[in-house]
Length: 443
Image (tube, rainbow, N blue to C red; front, top):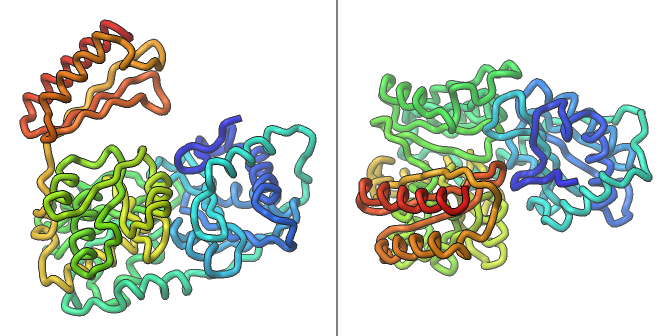
């Protein structure tokens, strides 16, 4: 039974695998898989604002306590808060109930070990094997949950990045909390540092999380920044582990731009070990070229912030992330943290005296074309002579000044063809050439 994807277990709340019985088994299986026999085992749980979060928390607690663990709920908090608390407050593991940027009908379960790092694929497989084992069951007794406000230690840790606004004191900033996990925390915290915060997306009702707001819907934030004359805008996603930005003119500043800004600043401070940044195959080649010009390598991984994290840990690197706004600052935490990303960006602005548009202007983004081709089955397309020939021809034409990425969708029978280059019309023609041959040979 395959339950875990690239970001934990995710699906429609109330529908397998997120129906009550399986959720409780997940809790019990986690106790069996993660613990070494010591007792009592301590888990901390946090959730976002979805209406299904409370009953999922209760079912997880039923499984966890039935397996001998104790459960502390931190309530509605950002995902990175749970990762931090699991590492620092004496817990054996942390569990987040969230579906991140998905609509409210969805929910999910992601787990951090006691070191604050997401589970390895081996541990995930162990949990899946236990859940599928019908020789054991979870008792009917409701799980006992201790409820505590644990936001203090997490916010104190964030203050180490930026403890006051400094020269940015009084600056108006618009903060979009996506009606999610940061709604009750981020505006008040940023205000306490000295910013003039104009919050939006801060009225969660259980069903409006990510609804036309947050990091996946930036148009409203951009309008608000321009209309109010704000210095910049910050947009979190539903669980607060990512952040995207808009500058004073309303232009979007994505994760690639943030990584470049942060990499240059960290290198200048002597805090970029290996002179390298880790990102995924989806980052624009403009980031790779801009870093290369400044003596910084870009190491690419598969899509998913957990793969970025694993590469950073393996190589001892300090900075990594995704174009979507998951940015990992290893000195802070080995998972994406929207508030930490925002504070680092504000710190760079304060120390450099430069505006966001100026900093982001260091990145020249190359045009991109994405074509999806429906195929009969996933096969090794490079073993098909006609497909291999057209791919090799396009790669030769790009000659280090563009990029071709071909990969299968993780959820649909689609082959995704992505091209980046200097000329939009040219790369569109090349993408269509590849797609045409793929259709002839594989569709």
